[in-house]
Length: 135
Ligand code: MN
Image (cartoon, rainbow, N blue to C red; front, side, top):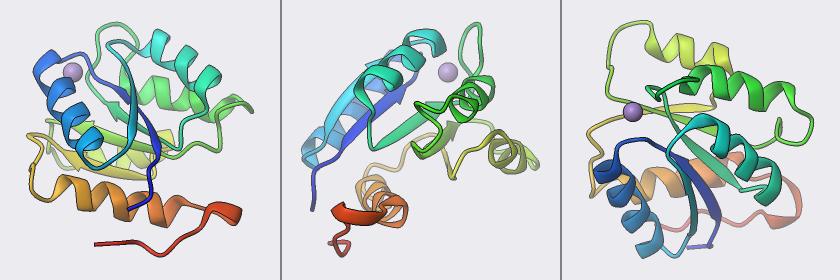
């Protein structure tokens, strides 16, 4: 599996720890933020390969943060995957309208999560860095 740099924006400490552990076990480098504004700053500075964005954040929510990423030329090309506990009908549509490439529901399924992230990274990867997805 190719290692990627992933930014996780998640205000729930337990969920952030779980996601971070799973991504690091898969060989990825993880940056994290517990709120949208510092997350946007890290995205601009670190230019991660993928952003996992909790939808429900204090203050600016994850959908507004995604819109902010998508209107900023410095961050608009970074794929964003929405993470939400709200499995309500319409949420996926809202996430996609905000600019999210994909949508994962919480609680995180620990056995399938790494493979889903690998598949998303492979699908989002363009140009020089492309490699076949490993299983
Ligand atoms: Mn949250």
